[in-house]
Amino acid sequence: MNLMDYNSIFEIRTDQDFKKKALEIFRFQYENNIIYNSFCKLIKKDPISVNYIEDIPFLPISFFKNHIVKINSHKTQKIFTSSGTTGNLLSKHHVVDLNLYERSFEKSFEIFYGDIKDYTILALLPSYLERNNSSLIYMVNEMIKKSKNSKSRFYLNQMKELKETILELERKQQKTILIGVSYALLDLIEFFKFNLNHTIVIETGGMKGKRKEMIKNELHKKLKKGFGLDHIHSEYGMTEILSQAYSQTDGVFKTPYWMKIIVRDINDPLNLKFNKKSGVINIIDLANLYSCSFIATDDLGKTNGKNEFEIIGRIDNSDQRGCNLLLD
Image 1: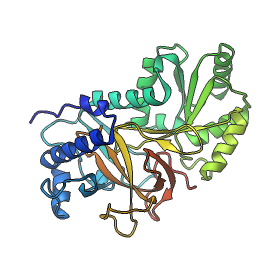
Image 2: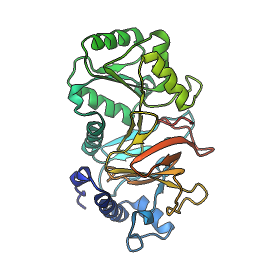
Image 3: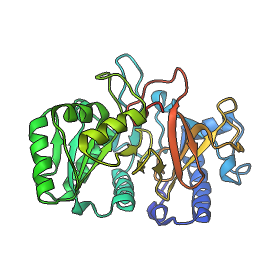
Image 4: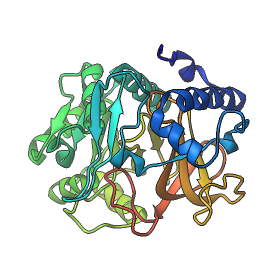
């Protein structure tokens, strides 16, 4: 079996392009992913009965904890694992082609922020650095390398050094992105106060048991005050997919052209002809070509139908995730 070419995924610009490619990828994954194929057959779905996006089955995200969700016959290049508490079963994403992951996050960044070479990338992600096989660390590490700026790097707990670097870059009027896990960003502004003009702060969510969880609005209010900014940006991604959405203002996330959010009825998860704008989030990530592009998450959200969405919580009793999920 030859790998399906992915270049056309990143050329999608219209809804019609998206729908056509989504149905093509559904057929490819149905034929070549044994886990997805089994799930589709279980709920009596096949390429003959699937003619619209609304007909496509979404694989429950929990399958990544117990199964190898990837196309058959091709070797795993890298395994990414989710963060989680001790004793909980972790999700594992068996990535067949790392070049595809890199292409996806580079193109997403370019859409929302422009050329990565224009930025210094400062990463404050201690809880992720302390474990292996984080997809976020892989992404940020590649971004640091591609920024080609000598000041771009990871920080573990070197708060004073990070503060001095930020202030030096501000004096030079150097465009900078500080990407950090929520609790570490709060730690930083407890030690130091800033008045930033050339730095974008992107929080990736998560207190990781280090601090009490807080609602998104409260978190952003504190961060805006501590960094002297009008807006705090957010990144939404997860171990099981290869694309990211970004929020640049007011907690509203926007997706790249090849990613779409659909909400489902919490009481009828297989019903996608669901007309309300809030519910449980299903993700279509066409870049997740060699795994599964159609995933039913445990996240509660609302969408305006224009490739924009908000996270408003999680289904009761679902595991605490390491990605950007704070109750709103």
